[in-house]
Image 1 (cartoon, rainbow, N blue to C red):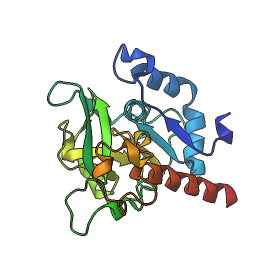
Image 2: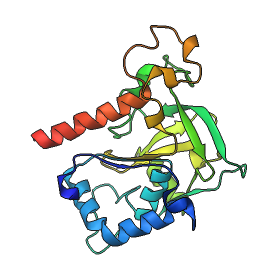
Image 3: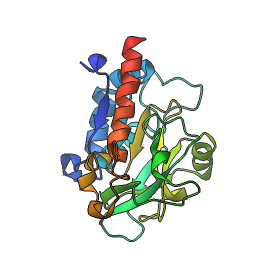
Length: 231
């Protein structure tokens, strides 16, 4: 069935109640049952996204950060986990909107064009905000070398302006080397309309023109999927 998918999303929502750890049961079932299908989808260039709990699942499956640049997905089982989303540095669940930044040098197809919401030289914008709602969202890696490689390869696609959960290098989202597989702790699906913004009535009419940042991310993915299908 997965071979017919043009887009794949791993949603948030406390899968299996997070009874063992956030996303752990869902991730183990994917590793055991669906890794070959997901590997083949990645090879076909299918865009994939995981938000919040979905991001936690993707790093445990090994879909993120993915194989090293230029390397293929392993045939004999899912890649080893090298990243995780640990408990927030403050030890508490966080539910708020955060200003974020995107990496203009990242290959991430999902975040392309989001810089339009930033003024030149800006260190953050009320327009480029996304909501977070998690207790385990602090991005960590298994080594300093892994973190350095993610930064050097421009796989860090999104960062927090104020780093609310203590993530390494303020990381909010990472992509695989192809830029088509993306995971982030913020929820772009909760910002598909300007009226979802926490103080949208204070935004000027000119600011509220066109798609929101969340909607633009999904439009980017749809266009990328169409390009694959028509190739």
